Image (cartoon, rainbow, N blue to C red):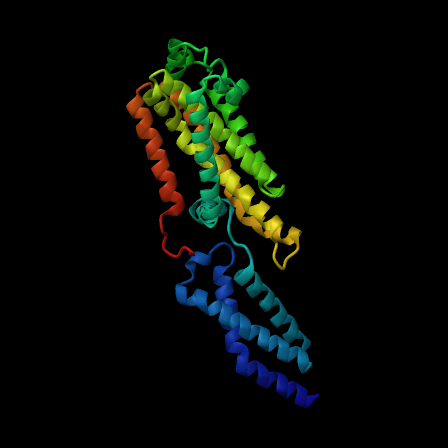
Amino acid sequence: MKDLALKSHRFRMEREQDWRRLERLLGKAEGGRARRLSDDELLEIPVLYRACLSSLSVARATSLDANLIDYLEGLATRAYFFVYGARTNVLDRVTRFFRHDWPAAARALWRETAAAAAILLISAIVGYLLVANDPDWCGALMGGMGQGRDATATTAFLRKILYDDHGGQGLSGFATMLFVHNSQVSILAFALGFAFCLPTALLTAQNGLVLGALLALYVSRGLGLEVGGWLIIHGATELFACVLGASAGFRIGWAVMFPGARSRLDAAREAGRVAGAAMVGVVVMLLIAGILEGIGRQLIQLDLARYAIGTGMLTLWLAYFYMPRPGARR
């Protein structure tokens, strides 16, 4: 017994200084005061934590003093939660999402985004050519979304739609309706990605056909410049959001089709982490697009101002997602 006590005392004397140092640093950091630690102190805690675990392992293996083991277990637990535990509040999480997680997810989906954008662009060209050669295609492609914008519509009617401010009333409700509709379309494109990407591609192509048909109709009436401004003020954000939503669906669909060595469920789960972060951001983009479409587009009547806002938003999104950031992963 005397030898055991001597061994325990010697063990404590050799390592206690590190334990006390770790305890002081943890006490300084706990209670939301981690910012008080210097960079050197922050780097020191993981080292001291590993030393504490080593001491605990030796203490257990050699059956040292039970009180000492209890002390080391408590100290190691506190250090574990500091080193590996989540210490961010809601504001920090939101800030991290907009500063890092969302743009990182968008960059990770660049291949899928390029594919979705290509499908949208090609289908828009097809829709434009179909209506340009046969105006009757306009009604077939646009369906109920046309709301009277078809081959029989007069130029005056089409122009009025571009500049009608609805008397300045009901714009917030209109914006809400558009936001809900566009969110449903984008989320559907994302959800359908599980079906091996094909429904997502078809939905993206349908949106492109409608866009091309609308452009062809207005261009045929000499209103190409005007409809471009009418579309771009919100379309730069809305179409970008729809493309990102489709790209998220493509990521999951591709993982399901080609899971590699993983199970399809595991592959889909892993792809869903990136795709899910992108989709949260898509909803934010659609909210902004709904405001621009339901309010900004109705109140801003100058074509030049519409083009300026639309191109400015597109530039902003491209810079936000793809501009290199210090410390960003390639």
